Image (cartoon, rainbow, N blue to C red):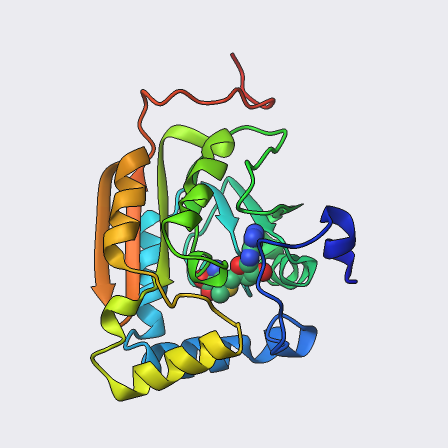
Length: 239
Ligand SMILES: C[S@@+](CC[C@H](N)C(=O)[O-])C[C@H]1O[C@@H](n2cnc3c(N)ncnc32)[C@H](O)[C@@H]1O
């Protein structure tokens, strides 16, 4: 059993890393394989698009959940200048990402994004969920729990944003269908039943100003945490 599993018990909310994509070696080839090859040539969305989306939504006081290699954060300027929290279930990703983003002096938290995220700290003004939802078992209706899980750390008016691979754009291209089948078969992703309409419904139920855009098979989303929302008290809040 790995270090993270030993800490949190049975990892029911994480796909097993059978392809080794989150191993040390996997993380070193991840950017080339996933962003330069798959994103551009299979998902129909160039890597610059992901970075531009992050740049547009990132605020100085930012939490990123499901950090991977930190590809987008590393390319954002000026970046999360005031505070950066990296949150993930895998310590390998957190360690890799923390080294790469050392210049932002990140805080690191091992947490399951499907459970309410309790962090003894001030709330965040932006929360990034890039590539997390398609990495979770289940469809977008069940994975809406992630939007509840961030409630304890989201400031009123915070922007919640990210991207996820959906089925909607897959059917249109043979290459996308084959890659989609391969990645699901290897359990690198689980998006067999992920549809834009469900993402829109899950966002709309909790947030305001929800925006969605499909580029190839990538659904980009953003939404605002309503100021009127009833939040759980966060221990770091000044009341
Ligand atoms: C595809 S990568 C995201 C990459 C990165 N955010 C980006 O935009 O390039 C998915 C990440 O989600 C993490 N993850 C998977 N299941 C999780 C869970 N239940 N809770 C927290 N993180 C999880 C993985 O460890 C991995 O770091």
